[in-house]
Structure formats: C-alpha cells, structure tokens
Image (cartoon, rainbow, N blue to C red; front, side, top):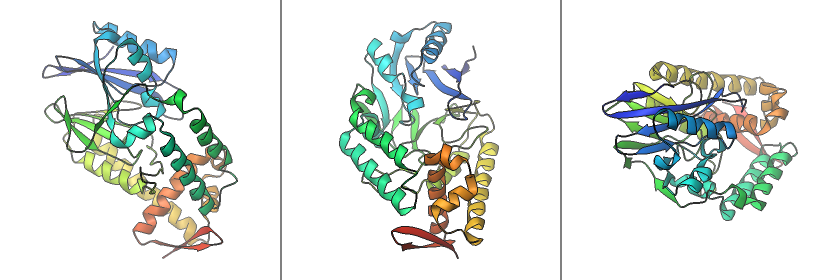
Length: 325
C-alpha cells in the first residue's frame, strides 16, 4: 500500500480498477495533514470501493470515524459515490465549488432548467430524435431526485479560498464546478479529472447556474495551461496513475485539443455543415453508443472554433449550420 510523505503530511491513494468508461481506475485520496484526515473525492458507490477505503485507512492505522472532512473536486458520480455512506458513519463537513451545490443537492429548479437547456440545444444541433434517451434520463433524475441528493449542507469553496493550507484553484472545463487543491509548499496538486495520464478528460458541455452554455473546450484549455505553469512534484488525478511529469503530460493534452479542432474544421471545410452529420462523420458508431459524450465534444469544439473566428454559423429551419472561414 503506497503512501506519499513530505514535510509532516501524507497522502494515501485509493486506486481501484474499474470498467467504468475507459478511465481504468477510480481514484480517491486520504490526506493526513498531521492533525486530521481529509477524504479527497469519494469514489463510486460499490462494495468494492467501500472495501478499498476501509482497507486503505486500516493500513495506515485509521478507520472511517477518523475522517474529519470530505473535499470534492467536482460533482460527477464517480467522485461522490460514498459521501452519504461516510456521513451515515460520521457527520463531517463536505466542501465543493458553489457551482456543484445545486448538482449535488439535486435541486429541482436547476434540474428542470438543465433539461430544458439540453432539449433546446439538441433541437438546434439537429439531433433531438437521438437525444430522447438522454432527455428521458434527465427527466428520471428530476422525478427521483431525493435518491441522488447528498444528505448534508455543502460548504462552498472558490477561487482565492484556501483550506488546510492548500490554495483552491477553479479549473473548469471537464465540469463547471471543477476545482483543484494546490499545496504549494509540498508541490502537490489534487486535480480531479482536469488532466489524466493516458486518456483525454472530456470537456463536457453544460449550462452554468443561469442557464448559459459554458464554452467548455476553451475553459479546459485555459485550466490545463494554468496547471502546467505550477511547480508540481505529484499531480493526484481522479483516474489512472499519479502524474509525476505534469508539464509533459499537459503539453500532449494541449496538442490533442488542437488536433481535434483541426480535424473537426477539416470535416466542415470539406462540406459537412450540420452538427449531427459532423458528429457522425467523426465518430461513426460511437454517435449512437456514446451519444451525449460525442455531441458534447462536437458542440464544444464548434464553440471553440467559432470563438477563434474559424467558423461562422447560421440558423436554418431552427438548426445551426456551420461554415469554415
């Protein structure tokens, strides 16, 4: 059981193999600051993950009751799965970005707004028929919201805050509420899913709390550039390996973003104008099997290229058409 120690602090990684998506592992971290234990992200709600948390604590002489707080890098289900289970055993504070709160508390007003946002988005992208399973799932979340909500009051964190001597950095892109925790003294960065060692971290299109579409590829790129400039010995990622060469890894991610943008631009330049058809051209069978992620990526890169002046769009019969400039 590995642990990483420096200047009276330790990190105990919880790295659990998974078939969830293509991420390889789901990671959480126990931070021992010398006075208390913090659980950074809470994995997925399975017996296997519960056992991994208990085993990691026990290997270092602790148990669930020794945890003092939970820090969340973002709201996705593979990062918050055991929060309620831990809280049933010990009532401790939970911290997350303010954008995470309506998502984690599964607030009805926010969920209804979000479903309406995606309905309008998919209509304007010409793929409302294929979107029906996604929209049905969003409706089911509204109807069963109490089953998904965290059973606590979330304590908000944002840019400029610090906790346990770590700087809170807003690093949106993968999600609207992504934050990273930076221990500058030890050069440790707990970064959630902003950057992963071997696979791309999806910049998932979503509305902000006011219903405005976030330009997530741009956000993700800016977050990567920001993290690349930090002095970091260990980047504790939400999946896969702990990263020890974050600047090189991030350089490859930035190259990949530009490659994807160039590829999408080429498809449009060759005469494919509709978002749905662009997605089908680029991703073929994945368009049906991974519809929401594929359309999220295509929409994100359309926004990115339009912002840079490489594309111009026009609304025809309620559907956006994109042309290369």
